[in-house]
Image (cartoon, rainbow, N blue to C red; front, side):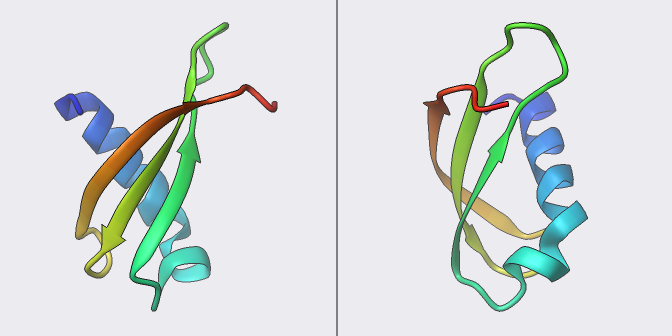
Length: 65
């Protein structure tokens, strides 16, 4: 992951951490940008607590928007 990508995905997780990921160990989030025709990705990560994530996989997803 690039530094920019890491910052964006971490921000996306932090925005919903208390509602979706608090207390979970292995998690998945799908992210995308607002740019036209940009791909979306699914990231698998180990949750070590708020703002402390270990990313273990990244896969492109089909655009379901």
